[in-house]
Amino acid sequence: MAPLSFRLRLFLAFSLLWLLFLVGALYLAGRSVERALRGHLEATLLEDAKRAAEAYRRGQTGALLTTGGIYLHLYAEDGEPLVLTQEAHRLPPEVLKEAGPIPKAIWRKGFAAAMVRTPLGLLALTQDTAPIDLAQRALRQALLEAFFLLFPLGMALVYLTARLTARPLEEAAREIARRNPERLDPVPLNLPKDEFGRMVEAVNSLLFALKEAKEKERAFLAEASHELRTPLTVLLGHLDRLSRNPQDPEALATARATAERMRRLVEDLLSLARGEAERTLNPHIVDLRALAEEAAREHGVAFQGEALEVLGDPDRLLQMLRNLIANAVRAAGKEGVWVRLRRDGEEALLEVEDRGPGIPEDFLPHLFERFARGPGGGTGLGLAIAQAIAKAHGGRITAESRPGRTLFRVHLPLLEEEV
Image 1: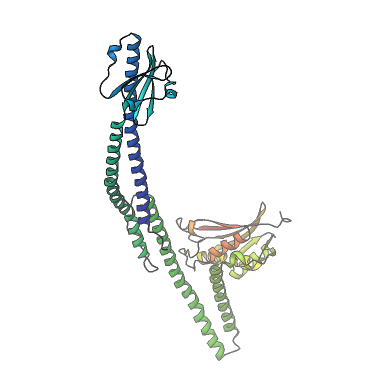
Image 2 (image 1 turned 180 degrees about the vertical axis):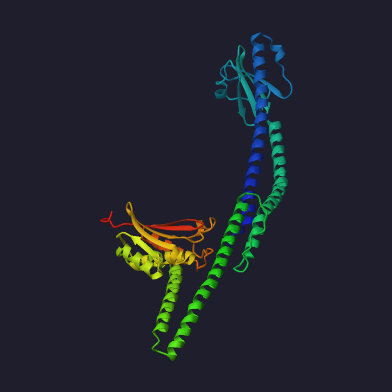
């Protein structure tokens, strides 16, 4: 069975509410009119019985003749009728026993009565309830006609309400359905800040994020292609040179260095794609100073620091250091970069400082995001992978920058015996 549409569910819900409201309102109206008629009749009988009893006490029996459909009955104490003006309204003795000095109303089939005890006997005033029954039947007929008139009218209004309510959602659904990987522009709907409006805003935010991610991916692929094309060209050239002169050590060293550069770039790409920087750790006791010296020596930058040990994966930590130092060298050159290592409480603090142009202030919050590429170029992977490696080791990387000075700080927990 196919699920019901939102508009149909809304229509059925409103229709049920309208039906319950209409039935409840008509029922309460009928009951209110019935109570009003019965209450008026009862009050009239009680008032007449009170006046009649008072007249009996004063001996004014001649004033007890009634008109307007009210019948007067007088009974002895044992319930025997003394005056019975309407045989159909005769009350049984067990009912008459309930009469007292204060008038009391009772309802019997076809009539209502008010009883009161007087010096002459038990007085009962009765009146037919046929007019009330007729009025109730007429009222029920009118209410039934009103129901058959109002219910379809209300259903039509409910349908229009459901249609108008669902229209913005249907328009939004049509617009969203038109979106695809090649069309990620925002949904052009002007809606108030209600549930539908917030939903469309959320979808537009998602479309904007997807579009931005796609643009970053396109830029990254272009940059990665460029980064791979250059060393491939160099590598092919040196391989061709080696094919002509196999004993050329310079060409062989350059080819190896170029191949290593390509290998690192491919490893960065794989680490980013698979999330290996966070998962594939092989922890050992690592001499952090030795790693930092090795990374600094590879890039020809200055280093100073004390001997500190951490628990971690030496290959991943070396990759993190290489990424940070390479980023600094690209910004300031070898002469403008310093690497320092020292203890900071229970942590090892590794600092990579450069005298480059600095990082724009608006770019700093996005510095460690994947595919984020600053003005210095690069693939947008190195810093993201470095941060992932630091977090995988229980640490973190922070950065501060101003024109002429940029400082990256790597915080890593020391071994317990080092603390």
